[in-house]
Amino acid sequence: MGTPADFLFNGRYFITKDMAILAGFGLQMVDNGGPANSKSTNIGLMGGFRKYLRTDELAPFIGGRLQYLSTRNQATVSDVTDLSILAEAGAEYYLGKQFSLEGSVGAGYASQESKLVVGGTSTKATGLGTVTYNLSANFYF
Image (cartoon, rainbow, N blue to C red; front, side, top):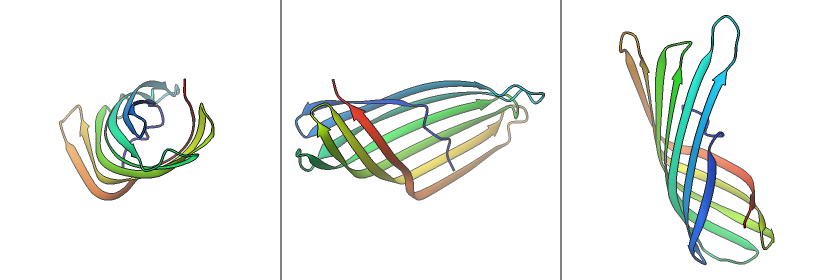
């Protein structure tokens, strides 16, 4: 379940030494070409917060996020909407003042609604559990 959110550009702003606000936005237009004219447009928004339990070289954290993704697929003439409300936990390892490696996992509620534009038929799936995982390299400026 869920549209991949790997097209989101994410950032964080530290409001205190151990608390950060998360934000993300993404826009992706895909044209696979071919006779099926498989075009899609993906839009994503993400917001959340993160509390660092320690601010040492190894910084474990907990937090939460709300994520919204929308996809319009022209080949199947369908709209797909994903909504996730997640708690997350992970850690960041600072290799230097401006560079870190991070791993996290997010668990919570996820909902996906798929609707055919022509005919209006829709299906909805919901779930609870592990929804996201992340490995990243971060640069701070």
